[in-house]
Image (cartoon, rainbow, N blue to C red):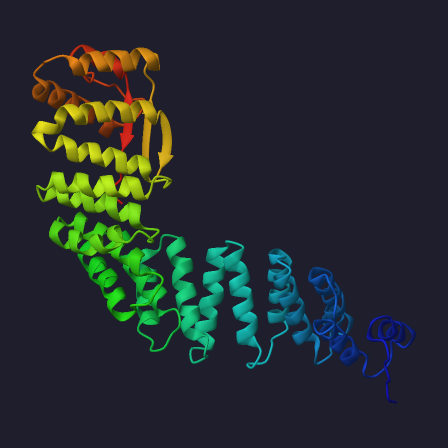
Amino acid sequence: MQLKISRVGCDVEAFLKLHPQYKLADRVQFNLGWRPRGSPGPRVRRRTSRRLRRVRGGGRGFPKSPFAIQGRFLQAECLFSAEKLQPAIAAYGSALALKPPASLEPDILYGLGTAQEQFEKHAEAAVTYQRFLKTHAKHPDATEITLRLGLCLFRQKKYAESQPLFARAAAVANFAQADLALLQQGHAMRQQQKLAEAAAVFESLPKKFAKSAFVAESRVAAGKCRFGVKEYVKAQQVLAPVAADPKAVEGAEASAWLGRALVKLKKPADAVVVYDKAIAAHAKSPRLPELVHFRNEALYAQPTKRVESAAGFLAFIGQVSRSRTGGLRVVHVGTVAPADREARLVALISREVPWQRQVGQARVASRGVLRRGPGLPVGRKARLGQGRDLVSRVDCRFPET
């Protein structure tokens, strides 16, 4: 019997309803699921839904058909494309339960793992990827699966387990995502506090992948690691190119760490210049409060600038009454009205008093509050001459990462 179809849509479906015992019905149902791919139409999602309904028949309607496994797999692919991840995961699992052939199993495992990963089931995705690598180690997608497995483990904070996977993927020649694998290798090492080794990995990325989109990020990460091991000269060298690039998204963060490195190198005046340029260039950056604060730190490191630094610290606290930006949090819970606080500050600054000692005492006392965190006994209150009531409590956290 030769089947002639003029209109694929309703004619074929009507035919199958009239002749459910047709010997090639499973093949017709399977092909019907493919047909809308080339069909014109304004709504892709509607076509995808039709494909879902039709492809289902390739598995459930004909469970013993040789097309059943592939039908379930294609159903899962359609669900994934429609962003219906939970049903897609179930469909991939159903296809695997039918014991697919070796030629199809890698595709099903890949689809299942990526759906689980996108659904943020990282532990389940890791198990799927491990199964893939165990049974299909020589598959062309094995390197990508190795990287994905490492990412799933990293997200579970299993940094020691993820590190060798990233290293293995990064070492594969001509792997399109080798730069990402190398970057993640460095992050895994950094999370284990292997700062010197991580810095070397981060610094190798621009040399191996000069055109990578991760060059600036790797340099900032390297600078943080060098700062962490007190190699401030190397931190300065690796951070400076990113801080000087006006187009770099990481420019504000690089400038913050570059300035801190310069202060450690006894070059606070140079740090202030860096911060001034960064504040002007990144006025809308969420890291602006961080830059302003560290600029005040650099001013305080200069004895002749401590009056300006004290005013800057207090202005910073008043302006950023509650902020959670770039890892820097400042909370001001003083009882003095803003206008009164400003008036007292102006009067205080205009007086000729021995600032160095008073600001130093205030700084030491404030640091005691900063390090203990909110809600704990303050101990000595921060004192700044007669302006000691300008700040009743300050909670500041300055992360090193």
